[in-house]
Image 1 (cartoon, rainbow, N blue to C red):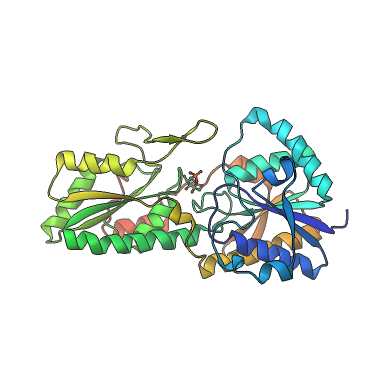
Image 2 (cartoon, rainbow, N blue to C red):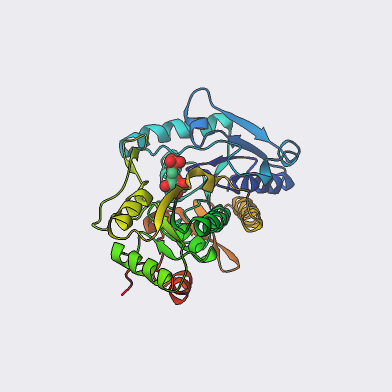
Length: 360
Ligand code: F6P
């Protein structure tokens, strides 16, 4: 077993709150062992592009800044997608960059996509890796929570609360479109926490008539306002993806379902005026909650403990109140964790009278 003296850390994929707390935890835990920690800038770009871009992070120069308490990624991140055919070439550059820095292993803070792509580089280049799950989508497999999800739920719930106030003033049905990619965790959790009236997620089919039926029942009970939460990955009633933009490798990106629903509802029912709020990237930028900060610290410290024990090529995960690890291959094979229709939060929503789609 090679003795670890120097490790790298990078954040990859869409940013979220809590990333800098992970970095702090890794830096401080590693410092207790006398290791050096190099922060790699802009995801894997910092070691695959020329010149290399990185910095030495120490307890002194990192803890003593506001960054561990802030959202965003101090190190910078990368969310551009990578084509399969480019992976061999990038892996070679990755291995060369890591060797040039003299790193004994790399901690990768990422979601399901990054676990896949970066673990592939590491395997191809013979670099030891420990993964830490993060994403506002909470769809990283095999972990109950990823860093950043709780903080994003807070932003979305605050938005539902805010919309409820203005919906009430103007007697409107306000639609909030939230992120989450193809998973409805963020929408469902914040809809329940915000006591919304309707929540649509990609995992559960819906009908516009079902939404209207709910709005009519609200009206019949004497309430003149409603809040509808919709996850960006929800398709039209007839199953088409709504998108008005593409990523850097030309794939369509979700976005616009809120506007579609607004027109579809108003085409059949005009008792409530509708308006749409697309929450966008503020969901990734709220202050990290206590839960996310503590989770980030637990994950970061565990990653260092694993490296010390020579246990690599794994991802750290939370299971109940226990930290566990899974081989990266298993994580990648698992794919994405979608919202389970039997989830306690879906059940709570239904039991409270929320319309969540057509559940058989
Ligand atoms: O995966 C995190 C996430 O915020 C998704 O919820 C969203 O679909 C996507 O990233 C947006 O990515 P970008 O910032 O590249 O538009």
